Image 1 (tube, rainbow, N blue to C red):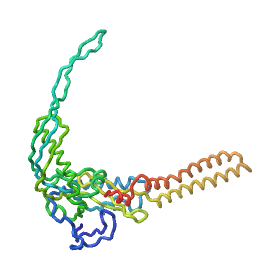
Image 2 (cartoon, helix red, strand yellow):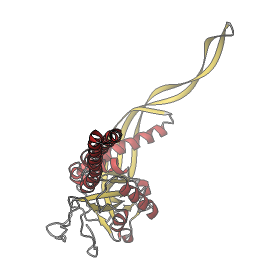
Image 3 (cartoon, helix red, strand yellow):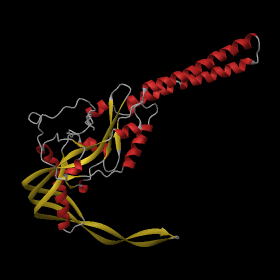
Image 4 (cartoon, rainbow, N blue to C red):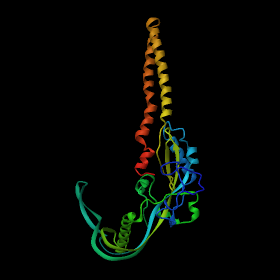
Length: 345
């Protein structure tokens, strides 16, 4: 979703310029409540601009449109969702709690031509079973609201949920909002795992132990209440030689960048032709010197042979621009289409 006042018509997900107005009846989102928390955009403009400049200069033979100025001018704010759930938990739990204790031991060591007894302190763990009852209210337990969340975090880093602050309408001014594509029912198992981990840590603290293992519980949940957290990304794009939009994303708090970096085959081919032309000219001069040396001036033969050798290596170098551009496009970086197939923003 983007504001009607926005002048940008490129989809931040797929790069399509076919963006239409939302039909409030047929295209109404499943979840329309305002978010509870928003992680603010905190990456400085200097950090974002530096990251984009390095990205634009990273590849030889970059497409003509891959320029830092273009990327900065097309920069937009994008907010992605995560589910937050509040729930009351009642549970019976059991676990083994470990308590550290120290024992004094001795070991024999042969030193200075005789055996010596060395005393040392060793820390061990005493494990004791514990059972108990837990009654607790947990608030704002995060769970993915997007099917692509794992891939997003792998590319850009995890979301700092703790940095979320209460939602204010001005926080989303001029920002594009991505709606959840994963219902709360699908996200609940992830939230349940987080709840068990949180409960395990609290039970370990309540038991006053140093370690906890084998934590098991039988929870009952009441009063589940779902809201959203929005976290920030910056999005921009450029066009490659095939007129395909390549999306570039930056983490809104750390400035970490992820994007499809493409090389220009056209530019690489031009350089290959220039280098190949130099090699061809050297071949002609070398052959001419060999011809003159064989019929008129023998002293020219070594020079002609040297020029042919140089021309051979320069001719091989002419393959480098096209080869490196092909390698970048084929192996080193994912294309935008591959990003979408893998669910990577």
